[in-house]
Image (cartoon, rainbow, N blue to C red):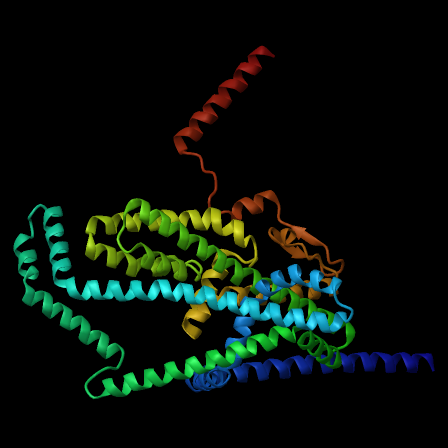
Length: 461
């Protein structure tokens, strides 16, 4: 009877193993099919995604605004709530009222900052554009004169021919035609395109108004939303699995919050520093250039260079020498940001290497544009964290170490004991592409010295 029960146990265990393997194969096959479908129908999926985001735009704007307003609301609530609780008997009602007023105050602060930003930058954009359009011929002619002086007159004929108003106008017309073709503003399509832009702007304005209302509701009912989400999580998953889901969610909040808020603060500091230095060095268009540099600095790695291109061109057209100095200044400023200011503010909020940062920006920007470049880094950081959790769980299940340092020079793992066998120093040296080599002449001289030393020792003995 015992042997029969044991054989039944073995068969059940084998059946369970076969079932797990079959499930893994089926899941892998389904994942491959889904991936193939996504690649094959990428354009259709992108159109569907754009339609969905267009419908949900007020909700998305509301959640983004609530995300930005939350630290401001918490600051006001921390200052106001104890004061009102001391003077109230109904603490529950007082908390709700304080939350509502602090949410409205946070909204007013955010709208005030945005209004101040737009109020300072829009007149500058209008003035700069008007100045460039009115004096574009004179500025281009000045750049050509400067180029002639720099080259010592070696290309004077070509530069002077290009300096004529006719050639400059032709070049400008060619550029305008390229912009029109790029924006699909050709012929009769111009009016239709401008009408579509006007309707889109009106729709965005209405969505922003709705988003403002949504943001206040989100902040007022923040705890209620959290409670409902936790109920759903523990209703779907077992307690131990639900704990893991909540831990990952808290890590996601930490990564996204730390990165985005830190990047905004960092970019604001860079914009202010740029403005002060431009006033000191008397660069033209200080406010406009500083805003462009600060806004584009939000994008990691590539943002500073993206912002440096239009600002350098604008300054270069006004004064070529100052344009070159400004480019050098921006390079120095970004080095200070990347090595001093950025690490102090952001710290290790992403926890990923430089390769994955560049990978996230390139892929995110290619798929979702500017927002993909901004959110790609924290998204990849979260996926990297989840992958590390899964990897460590699988290693612990097999009784293996989870310390990454032990796998750097790993040779193999002993199957029976699970012990990690490291490479010998000689094998590590062989794997190193930069090995210490001895010049043949130096090697011969060293061997000669060693032989003379050994012969002297023999004589002494």
